[in-house]
Image (cartoon, rainbow, N blue to C red):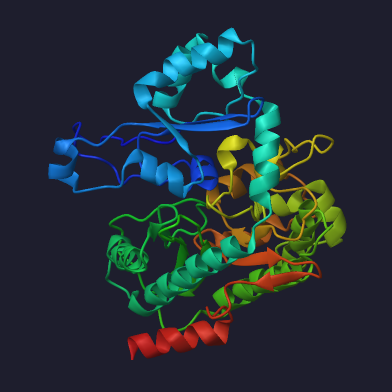
Length: 441
């Protein structure tokens, strides 16, 4: 297992904020750059490789614990200099032992693995170990008591992030201004953001990060943001609120459709339940709501089975969450979100569902239904009259500039159902409007 290194922004010593590899962190607890670990199952040994700090390191970065002291804290008694890793791996290869490694996602890891294992660079990704991936997924998927407590901390800070966004947003300010205030809350919580903040009045764009766009009256702000604790466990919440003190009548109607889908889906979260089925249930509730608005028609189940809802709900309902905000995504969605006998769909909409398999007690998942009115997509479907038995195309024009609404909460799957982790963040129209009215008074 290879830990992450410092990564340069604009010159060698100007680094991006360091973030340890999550699986390395899970198994070693060491949040320090430039480390690698070998677990030799056949011989029941573990070795941590790293550099010994010199005087230059002390001058520039201060005193840090020795490599051996850090290894002792992780329960590993053996350490070696990093430059001995190559010879150590060669000895293992000479013994004809099978070497397992996880999918690399950084170029320096690809290069190191290619060098250590004497395989072509373009073969590194294809030679990862499915057995190790499955073992790591099995361990990391079910959260222990300490992990749940850390995730609850991350979610609590994430709630504070969203309250700041709701209270500080107002017409005339830029998205970047609010995003800066949001990130300050994450940093003051002892960690940082768990992913780059999504903050936009164009909520129909699923991952539209903030810019210098000015918040205009009459629009809604979609804020999808989360905090990561000092131990790197994540929170991930989304709220949509008006730039003005209140929602418009139409905004309120659409918001309540999404909220109803969230509540219905969340009530279905329980062990043994396929998350794919919960996703489809949420899609049916969204379809029923859109039918009440006159945008869709016909039987909701039939419409969802045909994929008609994907004109307005193009993504998946949620994902696993833990040390990564999309937990273990670098290990592969087929391994993390599906089982060997349950292949991920390639259909529009379902292909974006990161989690489809049956839930288990100890999983932490997000539930995040939304409605997204994308003019370009509506134009294409309308020109083809696609699934016109379910869609009233003559009603779409009034939604071209509507934007999008997403509401997202985090849940722990328990032995009997689920536990809402984001317990204090307002989500009803009345609660959000009360905050906006107070902020703008």
